[in-house]
Length: 174
Image 1: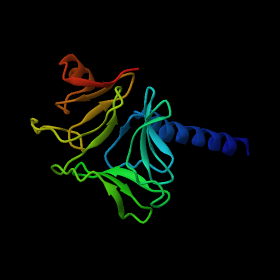
Image 2 (image 1 turned 30 degrees about the vertical axis):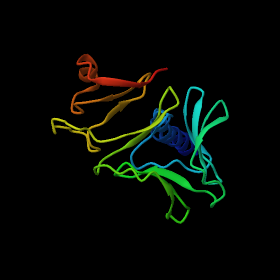
Image 3 (image 1 turned 90 degrees about the horizontal axis):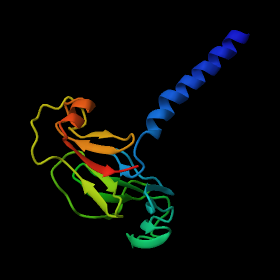
Image 4 (image 1 turned 120 degrees about the horizontal axis):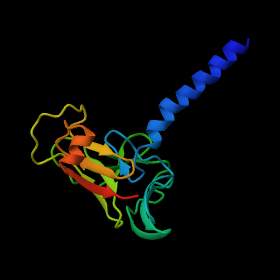
């Protein structure tokens, strides 16, 4: 009986490490491709936060003071936010229909929403030029979150090579 309990504890511990550890290493100021900002959740960077409210209003604030908002308060409840494959920032009703959008569409690709250190909320997207030799399945953006976030190209280089070649842009400092 002791062996199954030990095995169950070990299995649970291993599951937590494999599932929770990768999630905790993702930058808290970036909304990644295919991900959503759920009601009550925020992107944060220093004193800035961008929050998808349960009242369907997306709000950018500094130390709790309003800087910008989508002005969609109380048009529905429990909406969520995403960046489309064309770079359009969208607030979705729980049914999936669009409540609000930026109406800014680019080429089809992988876009990320970044809350920068200066409080600016920016959508970054596909490269204007690349070698086309990426080995990564998500389109050539390489992001490292410990302790500094880098967005680098060419994406087929190892982390060490990319840093050595100085092909990186710092988007967040710890």
